[in-house]
Amino acid sequence: MPRNQRILLVVAAIVVAVIAFVIAQPGDDDDEGQSAGNTPAQTESQATTNDEAEATETETEPSPPPEPEVNRIRIRGGSVAGGAKDIEVTRGDTVVIVVSSDAPDDIHLHGYDIEKEVAPGRPARFRFKANAEGAFEIESHVAEDAGRDPLVARLVVQPS
Image 1: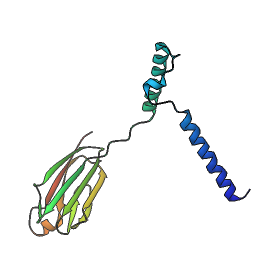
Image 2 (image 1 turned 180 degrees about the horizontal axis):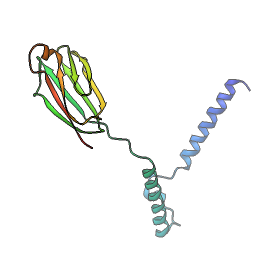
Image 3 (image 1 turned 90 degrees about the horizontal axis):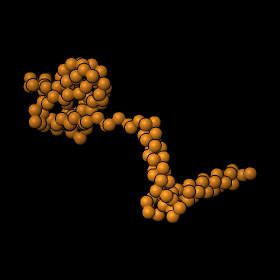
C-alpha cells in the first residue's frame, strides 16, 4: 500500500473515532439527560457515581503549583522608585524579581551570588529557588560606584 494511502487511512480512522466520541457523549442539559424511565433513586445513584469519579480524578491529578509572585522594581534617575523594599519569601519558594532601569546597570543579589545586567527596555529577570535562609541585599553596582546608596531591595528568606 503506498504511503499516501496509509496516511489517508490513519486520518480517516481518527476522524471516525472523534465522531464516535462526540456522538457517545451524554448531553450537558440536565432536563434532557433524564429519560422518563429514570426514577429519582436511579438519578441520585448516577449523580453519586459521577461525583465519586470526579473526586478520584481530582485526587489522582495534583494541581500544578501556583505561579510565584513577580516582584517588580523600577530604578529611575539612579534611585529606586518608591524606595528599596523588602521581599519576604519562605525557604523553598520560587522567587521572581524583575528590575527595570532607565540607564544601564548591573544588579547583584548577594548571598545567592546572582548578577544580571539591566538596560532601558531590557529588564533584569531573576528566577531562582530560595534555598538559603536569611536576609540578602540586592544592589546596584552603578550606584555603588557613584558613591550613592546601592540598596535596591532586601530579600528575606524565612524558614519553611
